[in-house]
Structures are given as structure tokens and as C-alpha cells.
Image (tube, rainbow, N blue to C red; front, side, top):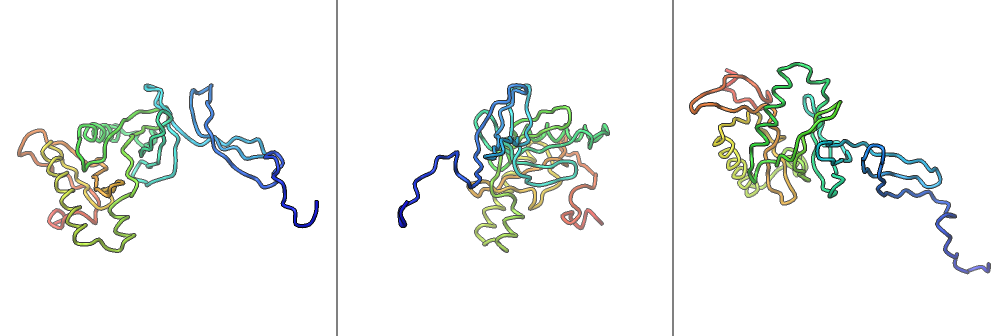
Amino acid sequence: KRRGDATPPQPLARMILPFIYYHTLLDIKRGLSVPVIIAAGSGKQLKQEGFRDKSKNVSYVKGKLLGTGGFAKCYEAVSSVDNKLYAAKVIPKKSINEKRQRYKLLIEIKIHKSLKHKHIVEFIDAFEDKENIYILLEYCRNYTLKDLAKRRKRLTEFETRIYIGQIVKAMIYIHSQGIIHRDLKLGNVLINDQMDSKICDFGLSTKIKNEGDTKKTICGTPNYIAPEILN
């Protein structure tokens, strides 16, 4: 080789620099299709964590953590069927041992599943395995209104007017269905790709059976409870 000659391209197998590439393999034993990371030279396969809806034979790959709540953690989840991205609320069964806790979770699922509105996070599905209960929801890429306010420091008057209008429309619809949310706050208002707001988290919500009925339970996030309720 003479000085100044260009280095000829090396075959992939002879490259010294390590590389990582992604592809999908089918795990025949579990019937679970999950992304697998293979580190060149090591031959090691590192499976990403996932979960499966056996009733529909659909698997989901668990992505990054989006947030945590009282008993649950929310993760990104990618479907093995159409590669669509969802938000998955994961509730460990061991954290809801009491009958009352299980009943409240069932009420949350029933209420959220019944609501269909442009400014409410869409309920996709709910299923379980031996360890967890999973609630699959519409994925809102821009996180919460609280996160947006923190990033931007403040919202413009025009934006505030738009978001208040959207939230009021959603609340009018929720109340028309005889439902009280009981935990409305910036952290429970998500922002989607189109920068529209969507109300989420119906964990403290309840349904009024008869018109004129009231609920006297003090609940919600303390810093958001109205002073007249505390008094």
C-alpha cells in the first residue's frame, strides 16, 4: 500500500469498532414477538421487557417510564401487531390485595371505558397476567399540561384560552354522563401531537346514580382541593 492510497472498505465481519443493531425475532416458546438487541462479537441477545394480552394474542414491548402513581407505573408500549405506540398503565396485583382497592380499579376501568370524547384520553383495552393488570391508553407524546408549563415557564393568553375551552368541553361531557372526575389538575391533562389537551386518570372518579345526588368523600390531590371543601 502506497502512502496516500485510500483505505479499501473492509468486510463487515472484519470491522473492529463495535456496533449494535436492532431487529425482531419470534420467540417460538412464548409466541412473543419482541425487539432483540444483538451486540456484534458477543453473540449475546438482550430481550427487551414486554407483556402479552393472551385473549387477543397481542404482545407489547415495554418502553421508557412515563410516570408513576399511587399503585401504578405508566410506560410506553409498542404493539407487535401494528407497531403502534400506546401508554400502558401497569398495576402490580400484589399492591391491590384489599377488596376495596380492586373494586376501585374496576370502577376506574368501567368509567374510563365508557367515555368517548375528543378531549379525553382514549381508553384502548385492559387485560391481566399472573403478576399485573394492564390498562392500555392513547399515547400523548407531549406529556402533561404541567410539564408544558414547566418547560415554557408560562403559556400565552391565547393558549390558556384554548386549553380552558377544551377542558370545559370535556368536563361538560363527563358531567353529562353522571361522572365526577374528582382529581382535575395540570398533571392529569395530557397534550397530544396536535397540541390538544386530553383529560386522563379516572382513578378517583365516581358515578352519580340519580340526578341531584352528591358525594361527600374528601379526595383528590391536597394542593388542588378547594378551600371551601377543607373548611
